[in-house]
Image 1 (spheres, rainbow, N blue to C red):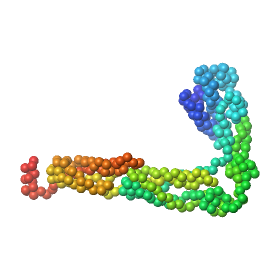
Image 2: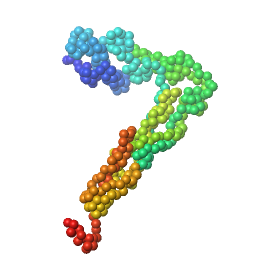
Image 3: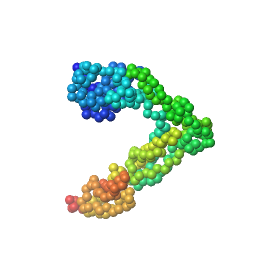
Image 4: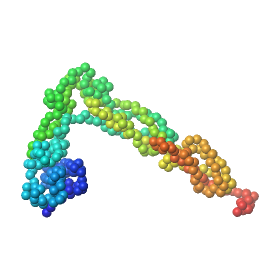
Length: 359
């Protein structure tokens, strides 16, 4: 029976080479027999599929003839069969025209290392903080200050981890490279990988005396006050990202980001719907019937609103551009005024007669 290599890797027939590589990486990590819950049979199937689909010429032949094509040398029914030693040799970088990938790249984290250099200094963690702002500050923006307890760069050693004035020398274990070579014997053969140097932790250098303030880490925990610009128009439960204001990275690595989750206090006067402000105004029966001008308080100040004759209760008037500034600029929302007509009660005889005549 013809094998469906695309189905084995879980990719579409139009998948790119990078998509195929990523799919094989997932399968290899999941089924590798050296792992506790690995599956050797499925690992072989995925490796066979990848050997074919990662090679442009073999993939072209497979797409045309299927895995039973004898001249292609596939494992399903091909005369050549699937050669595991050849696979291991090619994937390790020693064979020409074979599988085009770096075995250390695919299996590095399974075997505890990668062939792509020493340890990269760790980027600082992203962190979150909450900030409560007033309703009006959310409308027009403001500048706030928060205090964050986090890892900061050591001000004594400037993040180097070395006590000022101490000697820094090249690591003799890795000769300053930050990595040591490691050979893993697997079912695919011997795989050469690189592991982080255990003596210098991948730095390639060692200090005679670690910094006494940060214990050689280059960072320590402290409180930092950070100013935050609240943008005009921000809404409740939206976030502000402050690049590089998260926790400090180790040994000069980039800091993480700080995410401020903004919570807006409610207003007793205004109700926000998107970028529109909604209020309700009560008017008398006479005002509704004959029309009038009333004063409306908006977030931008007081304005006059014309009540037209015959206004019905529940009618909504729009005060254009008197609402919330659009986040990022570009005008404002509107102020919507819902009019509630108050029906008169406890009318005297004269008032009742006048209403009857009006009817």
